[in-house]
Length: 128
Image (cartoon, rainbow, N blue to C red):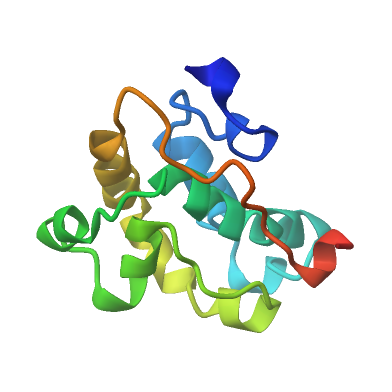
């Protein structure tokens, strides 16, 4: 199954863990560090991470049951709707829900990937 994954989603394959997801979902970065190069690198992967982790499934029901707040449910369906840094910083409170989000996404994974292999995140900081 992993061999069939696109390069975009390969790094977010079934072997990802809540720790790795939290790392690039800015949990370990205080707000004053989010503007640093490492903070921006993690932020720049947020849209891709959310899309790949959800694997084209909507896990909002599971996330709601696990206490994920409504403003963070976009992560549960892989739809982080923005690439601009300021808007992404608004998701910082969602980091407290990453373990629940990742657990729901893992539970929703099927035997074959469902993502669109032609999808890509296009953010201005990625130079695209």
